[in-house]
Amino acid sequence: MTVASQVKQTLASLKGASGTLRVYSTQTRDEEARGMFTEALEETQAIIEDLENRLKTLEFEEPQYKGN
Image (cartoon, rainbow, N blue to C red; front, top):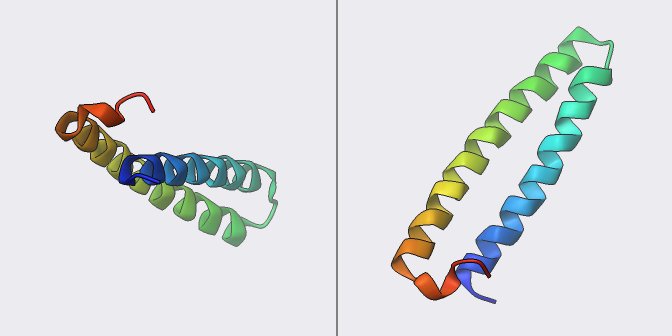
């Protein structure tokens, strides 16, 4: 498995986790829990953005990985 495919797989997993956190943050009635879910969601989104930028760099440096 290439580095690019591992990054793509990690991105897919993080996006799934992000969706779950979003659902939990909107469904919970506990304000403290909602705050924790929202904070975790924001951190996850930042990581997703960083990995997407890294993937763009990988695809630019190694064009054979683009679109795989």
